[in-house]
Length: 359
Image (cartoon, rainbow, N blue to C red; front, side):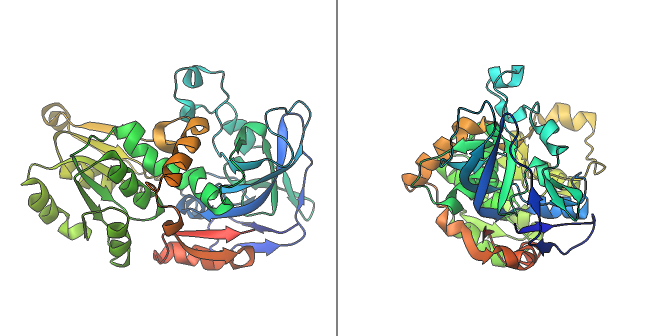
């Protein structure tokens, strides 16, 4: 079958091979035929080494498709089911899952990341985050296959699989944005746009998008931002919108310590900073003890939208059906698997909100 493979960390080019083989699903596993996958910045971060990932590997973790085979003992999903690929599946048994924080469960995730199912030229090939949606088919634990109604388009399901869940969830579940509040969002890529939509759904009165790429400003305004500025104009926007007090909520959606510091500075005393971006392991951010005490600001991490994806996917589908969540509008480019490197270039340059690869 065909799949896009990165053979060496640091390379900027994927090889689309048509001689990739795939193991049959073992006990507790399913085989999914991928119909659509989103191209997320985390895929690029894994390719460049920002996020840890053994190579060679098939990138991609934001996909949707149908189940084509099931392994022994699988009875929760069946052949023919339409599913969203959940890259961080909850086990349903641990203290996190029982406590309503299924997004923090890693009991399945850690094991599947080190279990290569692909092979090329007789060698094992991993899937990014244990997935590898830049392939025609993939094998994953059955918990990764979250069933959805058959009438949900695959490209919509793919978006929900990561970026939309991460962004909207950060607003609703992690920060718990209140109606009438002021919000700033640093980074207006695919996840940032989802944060903006989440803030609009939550009833924020002011939503300021901050991004150096002017081309993203129009998109941010389209999806609910009330103002869009470059980073150097963020302080002026803070003064204009909040009277210098600072925003009630600020979201950092890039993954850089300098931007977390900027987010903190833009937040009012007693406000909330939410870190959504995935950054480098050695990129540290520091605050002095008096700041933390005196400012009384909350600094929150938001991992995968702060909610159990098994419930969250259904809620996001309901919001999409109701016209409250614009997912079709987020897809600014549709390409074929053979055009994967073109998709990555669109991601690098910020020319697309979200690219969908039809597999």
